[in-house]
Image 1: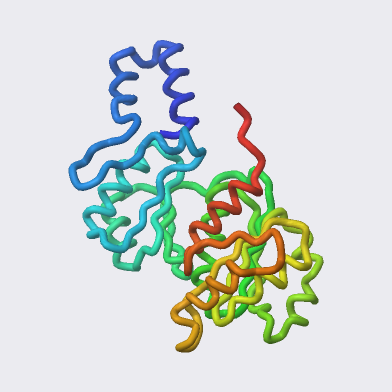
Image 2: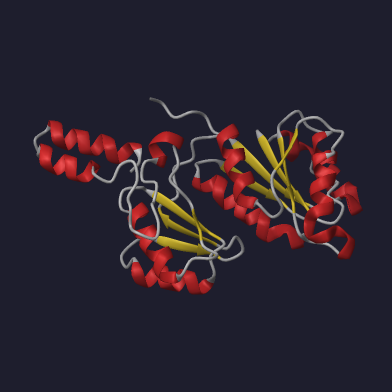
Length: 253
């Protein structure tokens, strides 16, 4: 249940449109709702200014549908990450009438309306085109949290002139999410060019000795350039979330 839902409920109570019993019934599920196999955190939007996000792998279609049904009941936007097309078909059938979209590259389901932009510019940068799925996960997450998001793809260190040609775009962002596999050098280079926070995302893209992203992870964590923070391998969602919390202005209380 998000801030708008609580405000609407209190207005209805004050204006006599709802009785105390009805209001209590709506608040009954706070701070979470126990549905047996899961306990959706319906209070999270009030605490964190963004609802709980559903990670789809390991869950059945029926479980994903039921959790999203509970979360979307009062929250204006809900995300499901690492969702397959099959997951989306099940959700679309189970939540008929709900506005939703499937972002195939990001592997994300968005239920509800994307919010009005509150400001804060996030620039998502990739070393190569193979990093785009992780980049799109980050981009869609930041957009869902109300940020202005720009994309700058395929500007890795193998052709660093491509990056330097976009120096003005790098400098114009409030936060940069920099994504790379292979040797993971790109975040260090970007951080050396800008005075903004850089969130580095190692990807599992690369040949054998990259060890499914471990080499990039260790390189990013060992960066000699200050201002680089690192998330887990392929964790575009985590990077997009952190970027949005840094970039966007606080909501007025």
